[in-house]
Length: 499
Ligand SMILES: Cc1cc2nc3c(=O)[nH]c(=O)nc-3n(C[C@H](O)[C@H](O)[C@H](O)COP(=O)(O)O)c2cc1C
Image (tube, rainbow, N blue to C red; front, side, top):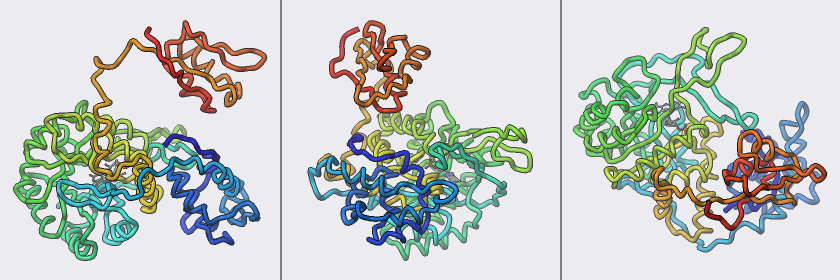
């Protein structure tokens, strides 16, 4: 499933992924131009290839490009070139080994049509939002945290660290809980339960004391929730003993999980905070309190930056800011670490793990599943791109299964868990050297610079040809050169040797 396709991903990433995209409307062949570009953006290559089958770009004057909203101040996305290049290599997509695959999962005994849920946040706050999300294909949603006390929100409340042009790399929020009353939220649950009986409604709740936790769980069950998620992890609460203060104390986690279990017979998930050195004590405490599963991660305490003119940290709220929760692609590695540790913890065997943190593409989701998550939840990617990303999440994951010949997504859960071992168990005596592909190398010398200043001075550059040469005696096989190469021209030698 590696990158065997040729198309200009940088050009794809210039696309603004417009709503109601003019490029699609302009296509004389009525091709879903914007959907195809979006599928490429989210790495759903087969989805893109299938949609392109009915399109002939070669003889076309590309009115899609004239309609592109980037025309004018900036250049239009070169849609025809992207599609033509992709067309020429799409036959190298891996063949299907099976046709029928099942994406259905099981969340503590509850059927999920697929592993994808919205996570508790602003993306899952109202009936209309969830109705649209369910229609789009999301299997369920953890509803914006329901609580009995009023919220005092700041404005603005978000800041972002950008990567590919306008895309968030990391995202910070200082938002609190649901700004609707408990009664309003419960009536949403009732309507959703009636209108979408097959969808999973996870009621995220937060109480101020044991009685409130019990009562909220009881009321959410009566209103038709499928499961309860205890928010032991919001980093933005004003009062102590709420949110992440609970998640940082295994004793409080156990006490309030037990309180929730007293109020409901539904499955209970404890949503834990990554603002700890080790999540296992809180996870085990949740299990002792009766939790059926763990959701992780909530957001990470952060400051995304400081405005160097106003000298105020981001986001500025009337000249001040605060530490807030970080999410989006930047947090995925940290989330995966927690999922991996929980997936390998014997004391948590049998507990459902719902993986959250930086999921944008089907590959991200798959990585969570492979390390032990039985379902996944998403917020920041939906805040940025909308519910429509579910098409490529489902399409890409199903395609992976077909190509690998795996009939059910459930077989993937935990399949990579044992690949993560203790520091003492990693093989440290075998070295794998890099190899340079002279066809792909354009002589930029980035590998040389990195190896000189950040490595072991094992690369020389031939002055005439500008090609790198390896001194195998000096090379320690760290692969920094491979990681920095902008052309993907450095691979790994087939043969490894003993140090
Ligand atoms: C704006 C915003 C509001 C959030 N509100 C809640 C909330 O009310 N309850 C909760 O449990 N998590 C809340 N979260 C955390 C998300 O559910 C999720 O755990 C986190 O954002 C990481 O996932 P992501 O990288 O897909 O966004 C919120 C996140 C954001 C960005």
